[in-house]
Length: 43
Image (cartoon, rainbow, N blue to C red; front, top):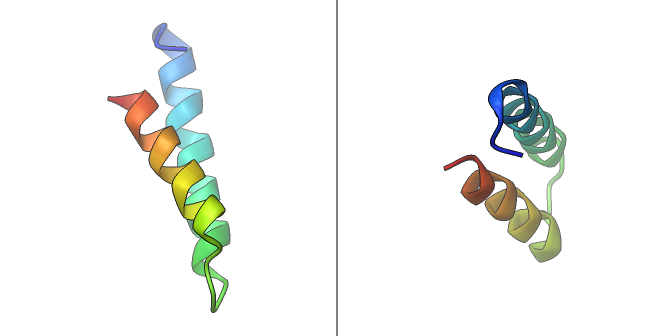
């Protein structure tokens, strides 16, 4: 997914996921792990 527009799409998905999780009082560890995986895929 590191080709041109794909990396931008991955960044958008990661940002959306972060915003959704930020609305919760208690963040599920699996949600946090998924976001970390998305962030690692961007690098």
